[in-house]
Length: 451
Ligand code: GCU
Image (cartoon, rainbow, N blue to C red; front, top):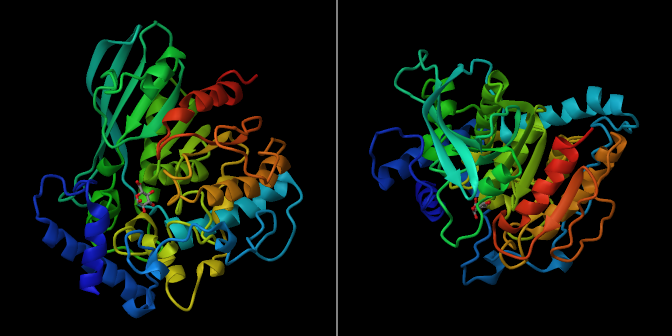
């Protein structure tokens, strides 16, 4: 167990830092042992043995049977998806009222208990302070950059500190009430630094439209690894103890951080907290859809290349598999309970929910689902992300909005952006980049300029 856990952790932890261990320096071996012990503890709480856990796909394996599948003809081993508009006890959801009163709450509960975890009742409060503010030039726009720290009250467990890092930049034009595009970012450095390639950064595009751009750093909320689960906001709430199977994982914790950022916008007249969008790529794309699904104050989302754990359905066999996410390298994103579905005898098909219903939880709010080229995003399962978007559309329609209007995948660069639920696969890499102008038009149409 320990060995398997350590090797898979080594494979996925590179490059994502030692977040969550504020100041304490430990070498990678000790951290891997901590993660393996945490993972083992969760398996024993679930009554699972390591031998029951199904292995994830291995792109570099010499053994073809272990490599990811990219053949569409065999990508749907479980073709029956749960219907977003049928309750768990079999009733058809025929009205917005029934969606809001019965179906949405039962889906929220199921996603919490079986996939992303619950936010504990005792989460301490966050106080935001401005650590620095500067006037700068961004392209041709005069801007103000504000750096913020969100200090979490740790009086219940002083050995764990959580200081959330963020920045926000807005046009210095004497007005206020700025709509905000908030991104989950690896860093919150100087947003006015020109990009290496010379192209306009997303923040520059945002301020040129007269809005504010905010970067929020997930690893300052909760570390991106199993060894940090007894640290960060999750560890603070558990006073350094291991998680229970329904406790939150990192994706939910990052989403909680986004909610605290909105709390800040609500107190600051410079920003319009009713017009905040969330954006993120890949693991942060997963975090973005989780944040938006659970916090109905988030007005819109730009969910880029989110893949498995984001908007791609678990019932698909294409690219990453459930076994990758339930391994010791990625299980920390989810609640412990989720590991059950990656362990025999249960399968993905035993989930009572799937990811189209996570998108549906965002309805009727404008949500833009994005992916890169087939090559760059094949691990992310482009077709799977599209199928989920199509399957979420009926919920948007029930709530009086437009879905994507088709279940046929359009060619790359052809956006389905004529409704509150939008899809666009861009020509380019595993990134949000080429879709930014399309998302900003979409946000303008459905949020900023909406009558
Ligand atoms: C890995 C992981 C993906 C994730 C990606 C990323 O590839 O398997 O699920 O989206 O990292 O965040 O870059």
